[in-house]
Image (tube, rainbow, N blue to C red):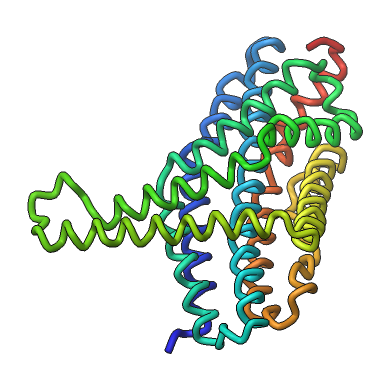
Amino acid sequence: MLASGDGKRLVMAALKEIKRELSTLIDVQAKQNMVKEVARDDLQTRLSVYKELAIASITRTLSALYVTAIVQLVIYTQVFQLLRLKRMGKAPHELVQRKYLSMMKYFAIACGQVNFLQSVVEKVERGVTLYYDRVNHGEMYDEEKVEEMLKFVRRETETDENDWIIMLLRDLSNSYVAECLNPDDAANSAEEIMMGVRMENGLSKQLENLAGDFEEILESDVFAETLITVEEKCFQTLGTQLKERVFHSSTELESEPRQVQSVPFLRIVPPFSNMFADVLNAQMDVQLQYGDIVLKSHACKEYFEAIYHAGRP
């Protein structure tokens, strides 16, 4: 019998890995150290370093947001698939848990691969940098420009609406196969190799089925409306966090992220609410942690104010 907390444990372990890898890929602390090093340099030098710091901070925040959106999509896929099975009378409680845990295990393995996160980070960083390059940086002190930046980055990042889904499936497959079968390991016996091949074939079939589920679910009006609501709430929350960090007083800028009430994501699937609500709420909590970006610091506040008053890019 499967433990009821196994799904949450697997997801939280994967999120812990995500946070660690994001901190490695986007070293905000290094940017902060650079700010300290140029504190006495001329204005133009300091502005250049502050710009790098702001880009790195916002990139990490948005990357975390997109990754949590992927987590939500994986969970939604399982919810809709299992809800359909239950209506057909083919989904007893243990089967529901087993299928959910299976998908979470594959996802947790994929999260351990840097290339999975690197792809997301690169797309987000490109969008953030493009936006900074097209505006007078002093305008970033304007509340409307913060909202405009979020919309711009979203458009740039989502040029292919299915690209990140394909990326997820590919990395799930590659990561799981690599975990099961290491061709460089001379200790692999013929039996172990055949077992790895069978597992690879089995996984490929499962992922093909999952891809079909994605296609069917994504075409569902109910799913589309629900996902849009989730995305809008996520970006609304992120926008609020950014504006609070930029426009409030220095005391508030240094405060911890304001905790907001999590969205009742699973209102449309009440039979599974208790099973998944705490997991999805945890995703929002993680996103809010990243919402407390370096814009709260005196250094970045000085960056915005200096550019605004200098009146030059």
